[in-house]
Amino acid sequence: MIKRIAFTLLAFSLIWSANAQEISVFDETVVVKDNLEPIIPRPEQEKIANQKLADLEAKTGQKPNILIFLVDDLGWGDIGVNGGGVAVGAPTPHIDKLAHQGKRFTSFYSTPTCTSSRAMMVTGRQPIRSGLTRPLLSGDKVTTNPWDVEVTNAELLASAGYKSALIGKWHVGEGENMLPHEVGFDYYYGLPAVQSDYTQFLVERQYSDMINNKELHDKAFQLQPEGLIKGKKGGPREVGFEIKNLDDLRQIDEKLKDESIKFINENADNPFFLIHSFTAIHNDTYCGEDYIGKSPAAMPVKDAIVEMDDIVGEIMDVLDEKGLLENTLVFFTSDNGANEDVFPDAGYHPWRGGKGTTWEGGVRVPGIAYWKGMIEPGQETNELIDLSDLYMIPLRLGGVMDKLPDNLYFDGIDQTSYLLAENGRSLRQVVFLWNSTDFCALRWKDYKVHFQVFDVTETRRNIDASTLSKTGTAPWVYNLNVDPKEMASEGHRYFEWGMPAALAFYKRHIATMQKYPNTDIGLGF
Image 1 (cartoon, rainbow, N blue to C red):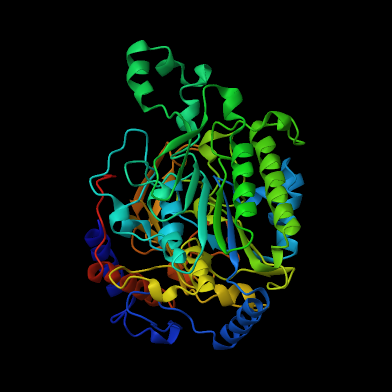
Image 2 (cartoon, rainbow, N blue to C red):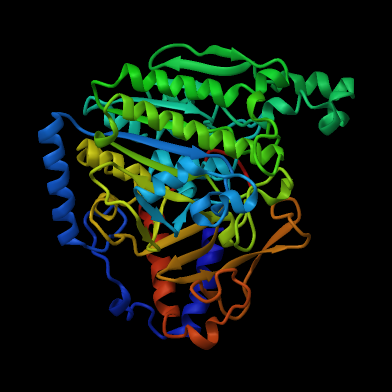
């Protein structure tokens, strides 16, 4: 696939430029190390970040904590500060408060689907490199354990004395030696895969063809998870909470909240790294009983958003009560865009496409950083950042960047100074967007360049009724400042000047995969 795309782009490069290497005038980056993504140097804001971190460590006597809130399938427009909230039937006051008191990233990017995004966040690498290119489904078997190759940020932070936990949805492999406490986290409590793994055995009206067909049910039932799984590093897997019915299912996010609060309380005196990974708002949404009908919209997914927002508020209150706000970086985001296919059980965004595509609706997600006294409040920025950067930032804060292995290429960029410097700027030049094993698009500055595009043949069927096709004579290009919905490509008329640069960025990206080969774990398409 890579060879095919590379050949196609070579043809494009011949059309647009006799020599695509003659575009260095647009390349702002420097190579710090051969296996690290090139960065745009920002020396002045690096000095600011270094000073802030040094002053904080002198004051507290330890490295800072990191808390990442990761929501499932939340759309860019679901939160109030992005135009959603009350306007779309589900107020998000606690998340909005984080944004007002922190820094909001309006161009934060994920990948199109759950597994690939979550893998990128805990490996710092494009999913095509690790082989974790698509959602792992019930019954999937991998031929190679990717964690024999990959190294989680939790594993590296352990060398600096951090205690780590992943509470909630994992979905990055549930086979032997693939759960969080088996790949570097000190503690795990949550769903090995996804919420619909449970509902498909519980919701008769929705899954009646399988549930009421004894032959199908008896075979499929072998895949049914027992419940929420827990485990400590080096220890066995245990059932932490059995899920036998929908009443049990409704308790999941409250159970996860309790576990995260317990973890924070137990580790208040030493640095910790916590990923709180919601089940909300993945399809088959069942909010807590106390939240049924609580949202103005009184719809299940909106009720779940209100519950999710309250949980964010409760966990933040615990940090406040423990006196940890000044020593904890908090980041809030989503693993991919809203899943329009499951409407009305879906989130919202104003963009084209949705989950499962590399249109903005599939990959442009909420991004908020909060850190009391360290991040000046009320900032908004449209410069680039993505989930792989959330791998590197904790490593910088923990002082373990030098622990990165040399045999792997890392796509993540340490964006600490982008967060900490007032009106700081991104160190990332390009966001590269893959869908499974297909390179589809890139974003450079305000330009989105598509080499393959999703053709959605039915309304709100981005996953279930779409095809992926190569573009024709030229890549499709959109200036997102004036065409944020990607409605009409005007690349060949208005972007000839930039096309050679985009092609050169792509070529450099692909070249890293020749020097640092990708891992095939046998997932197929």
